[in-house]
Length: 274
Image (cartoon, rainbow, N blue to C red; front, top):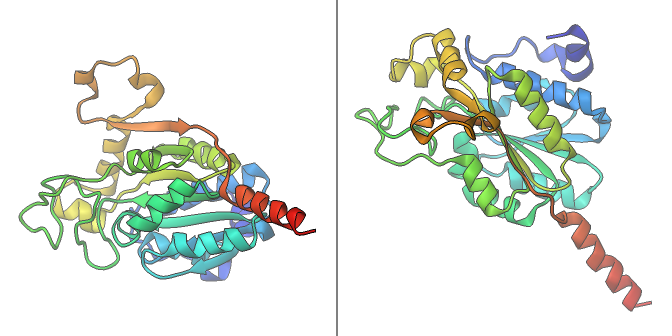
């Protein structure tokens, strides 16, 4: 990572970070910081909110206005911040379990409101911090400490969920495709509404070990070989796409943003009462 990014955007006294060797979360965090830098945002007008989990350690390292909140409730806190300070760029960092299990209802309603928040889900397909339990995104038949014989639940497609619930910008990239991830986060920050970026991470410590996926390098190679950009996917047959992971910009449909619409009500009522 360029030293100027570290000096400008990280709390250097909190480094080095404590993620496991080979974890994809550091790469994803770097992409977020790069996107903020490229967008030219005033760091004093950026607020980064997280819940609980491996990914939620990120705000502790980042030199912005930051909140480390409760499990599954990051979007609720972020909604309050955005309503109180609409001019603030609010970014929410969550894990796959944090966002789609205990926080799933908050996610759905943040999407449908189209409130101006950028949500970034670090998806490593498992609960890493608390011991490797399976999560709502653990692939069917894969293992976790709470599914030692294989998970029989169907996994959520986070991007389809967000798009269907009303998010106006949705994208997906992997830790391997770091430059694409930076571009998607930058686009999400420029969207005047609710944006969700799914960042496919890797967890060699729990998910990889329990499911015999090899080393962190092997898991990154899987991302390289199995992710297909949606622009290229349009030219491939269903058979060629079997088992592949679609990445890229999956939805971009601007609609009126929630806090702007709320302000219109306030302005109308003030005018009526004059």
